[in-house]
Image (cartoon, rainbow, N blue to C red):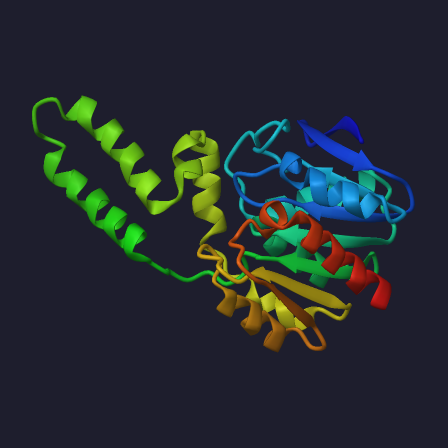
Length: 259
């Protein structure tokens, strides 16, 4: 494995590259980075492929955008990245945020993307509040009642940290102001409109116990993407690539070989 860096639009972009052969580009999810895909990347590379896994702007060792981005700006970045790396024809894998980006990019670039793998992809955007998030939302609203109380300046930051932790979105709490606004921009856009435009082979891989992007989303995508194949991984959640890397790598390789 080699770690490299290039500059795109004034942003230093770090990426990892494994093996040699037909290229496989992997896009990580929000709060993650290329480091979370080391095991899967290594296993795929061992089968005779060149795996490229970048840290998207704002994550890992890559720099942040100079202003808040939205989906469109990330897609433009991917276009530049593919051009800079001279990827003419490649397999594309995307997880969570990276899955949504991979879907939209593939819909627009079917000539360069040979096959698409969506892992617990963040495509369908609608409010889903489990008991933790519902509780956190109410606590956040209650903050307004305490804002004028004595010592509020010291209490509120601690309360916000607790709220985000309960809600399961502590990555948001840790993010810079630019990346918080980027997150807000991204979750506003539903990407289902791209599903019906996909004309290449698609594998949908999902964790059975995914709470962030429920497994129901996988079946919606299977219905929307003509001819797509679906694999549900038992006893894993949203980060299936970290909880079951061997299974994920095998599933991806079986799909590529079959097609």
